[in-house]
Length: 328
Image (tube, rainbow, N blue to C red):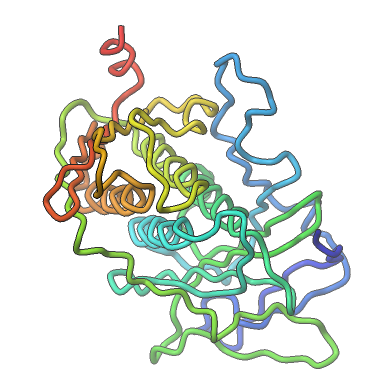
């Protein structure tokens, strides 16, 4: 599907103020980074002993995300801002065709102008939207678990298929004066292009939906909770956004990876609209991420969803042991 890219991404900085990658990045013919880059493939997670076979892994074995060290040019990023911008970006992408193709873009939110998340691709190429969503959640897990300090810093992640680079996700900071990117061109060298015409909308709110968030129980491990939330968003992105969520739905990937935080949707058994759809579920999950961050409390949570005042269902973040006791 994708042509072989015998390349590595090399970052260039025009001045000391340019803290991250540029919209046009040179491609060089060798691949030293493939032998030295850190594979960020959810190494902190494990496949649970659930009786599921390896074919149930939600990620194709050919797909990998590799974190590239950008050295002393890296700058610290806000953990909260990075997490929320990733969640809101997945919310935007998740409402579109999961298997469809996407062009390069750059994204941030009004709440958090920094970091800017950019997708770099070879000229005239597209990439499956699913790969970008998976790359974003794997990058987040990598930042939360990597040993160096600060964990959250301007970063570059290569997206690979069968060991070939098919794209790159870049976490960068705005430049002074409000200009986000600089231009570096070289007519003799192929470039990765960030298209100015492909900026994604950050308007992910919808006034029809209201969600009541209520803490209901014990503390949860923050990283485990956030991985559950991101996998729930990823799994909710697979069906069409207007598809109805089953009456009792849990994200399949959460069980596969053996996460200790569970997520359960109990959709109202309504016959007529409004119904619990994945569109509303994605918005509610994005709101839950902000709720956790704003309160600084990572604990069991109930989400009660209503559209134009009509209840459409409840969702729960619970510890697996709590859920097991209740189901028993």
